[in-house]
Length: 99
Image 1 (tube, rainbow, N blue to C red):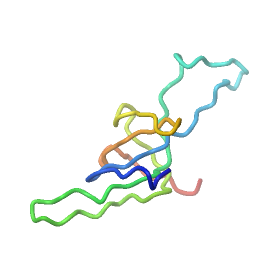
Image 2 (cartoon, rainbow, N blue to C red):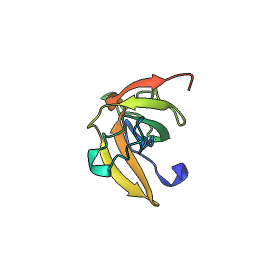
Image 3 (tube, rainbow, N blue to C red):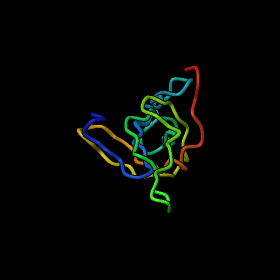
């Protein structure tokens, strides 16, 4: 799928991680009460921001990175039946290691 999506500039495409639909106490949580996920995996990375000098800044993120991103950052969309999110690199707060 990543080869079909090519973000521009300093944007990345993230597949949000699925959250549990049942609480620890066994209560089923409806979609309307769920919090938006803030973790996901990067599936596509843009070429980097175009600088005034004409060069591109290097992207710190790469495909496969598990990231934590701003709760209401980015734009959600569906692509080939999957819920995805397009974010600017600056909306990514951290890369999660060791998971």
